[in-house]
Length: 324
Image (tube, rainbow, N blue to C red; front, side):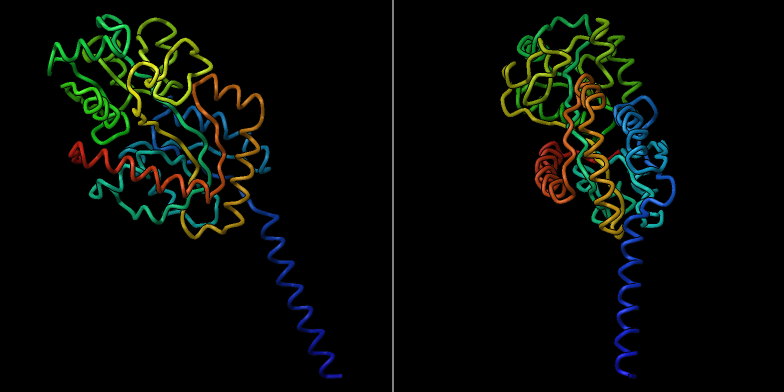
């Protein structure tokens, strides 16, 4: 009798633990999710976040609140997430700069990049190679010819020293063997103003935030830094088509959180985002904005990051970039 009673008690306990685990998995998320964006409103990451957040909330049955924490190339946003409870209710828009470039500028990092957990790569956000409309260059070739005939007189803008836009310019300098001068700004907005006015000649910027200026004629796009032409700019050649094969400083954006967040929460977030990216209205909007949707698994994203760090780390080393 006592043995039977013990067996019954053990069975009840095991069932209770299983039920509790199942309930935990089913109830995540239990409150609104904070989606931290490490850049100011109006930039490409902010635009993407505000497009996806309400759709993601619909799938998860919880509100997803976008919160801007700009500064330090996205490091401030990452630090906010790493200091939050690791329960999956605080996530952030991780970028090339934060995960693939900043580790090679360690004095900028207020945290260990290994404490960041990948959720999914949202998509690639290809650069447009942009010049001031009055510059006598209408193609990549004529720009390179102009730069070679005016050494150290052509400057290029970026949103800061050591950013992806800066490294794209450094890669162009090396690939095309031209002497162009880097002018760092505190953000892409100010750099874009000076490119439009002619204070600087060249800039690499995501299509999602620069297409309005291209379509209005205030800036000239020479090429898209991508393996494929953009559906929204079908007549714009890729840099490879324009004579720069192997020129591939392609930034990306993704969702990340902190190490220690339960695997089931990460899986739930990834599946929800992948579902949102297949919605025709969302996918069409992203493609129209020059963004290539992906929605990879955490494991796929981690493998991608390992290769991406090698590429960007080499660029940082070759350009001898130091943090500001």
